[in-house]
Image 1 (cartoon, chains in turn red, cyan):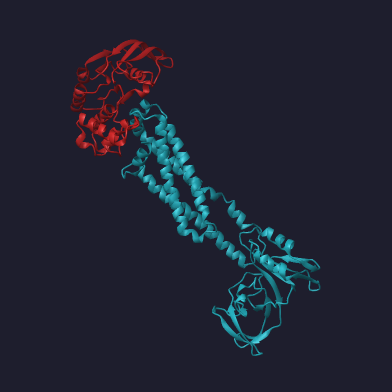
Image 2 (cartoon, rainbow over the protein chains, first blue to last red):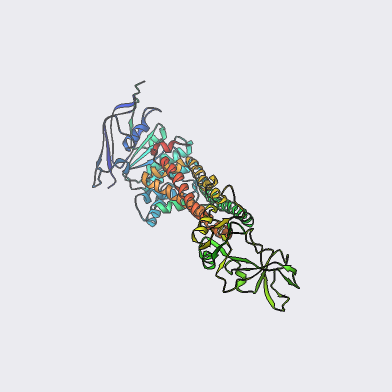
Length: 214
Length: 337
């Protein structure tokens, strides 16, 4: 149900006259963790935004191909869970609350959402801190809460944008382990230039920037 | 889910919006207190002006030679008007000697609709005749008759009872010369004489109406049109935009919602619900303060109505402004620090 293949064909993205990337084609396999690799400024975040439906590519096509009965005719924003660069959270709410908002926003009953959130927190090793306020968690823990939030949703695609950019080596290693051992059925695309994360992925896709314009 | 989120975002003691609730409660109380203070000033001013004869209308013959009278029924009938406090005839009589008050005490007959104590007492002693005494007493007239008399409270200028002994008008009296009308202090003074002239039935020459005190500026209309009356809305708007400024620090929270799949519409509803709840505290505080202080208000509903307007202004200003920031692209919200 969750497996979605993401196909990109000759995709170009531009902001005004400035082309960030062009002629990019790739396939992200369903239900696996793929790394989108490239140097800073090569357009990784822009490409993720295009896959997630936040921006429209200036040319080319992005196709989601379902391997089951999932309707890919839904807006892509409804099919994507994000793990952002920073540790975005509700600081005055518990870690559990922070994770629960994903299943709740999908319309799940609070009790079911709670169970799902606890399970996701368990997956990222934070169940013991479920009732702690998010503001008391470290940056690495908050990043794991973001990952748990994505796991707790039933979105078929998880897009992680440089999830370890603000983490130290130890926490980066933890994130890499979590992604490697993840049992999620979602198609995970991790934009990164971190070798540890690249190693943890099942495969990687290289992106080269194509800057042009004024 | 949306109301659950709004409630949890507000009622956690460590929530960013929690102190705003305290501010809302404080502002609600301050707003009511301000209105009560302004109302106090108005009431004190009106009481002072009324004692000087504001809104007291006396109709009398234009001159001593004038042969005009007014019917008792039409004069006393004015007392039943909602704008009128007291109204009735006054008929000067001959002075009399009393053991308790002295000799040659001025005596007059007055309508019970003008001097209500005359309905339950034989006479009312003017406040200036018995200063410092407020209890009823018996007066012995030279004829030996004993009058059970009340001691009157000071009356406004123009109501000629303070320095005389008032007794009830004889039942046979059907006309008089002087008709005194005390209007409600909140009635515009300019309309008071018109009511008297329009409804008094006069025989003989036309009556002349006058007021002992004519103000150059109507304090009531000045009060009603004062710019400070918009203060509650100003306070609410200021608080609302301050709350909006606070929401600038909530980009991370908004991003967490949006990146978790919460739609723009749902996030806007959460934000609006939060602001509505805060405005509710403001309204409740203002209402509670008004109830506590309401006895001192000319109209206790005024602070509540202003608080309703203020709460709406608060909700709309803070809510719509914060909602605008919730409309930003999720990835942009995530990058805000």
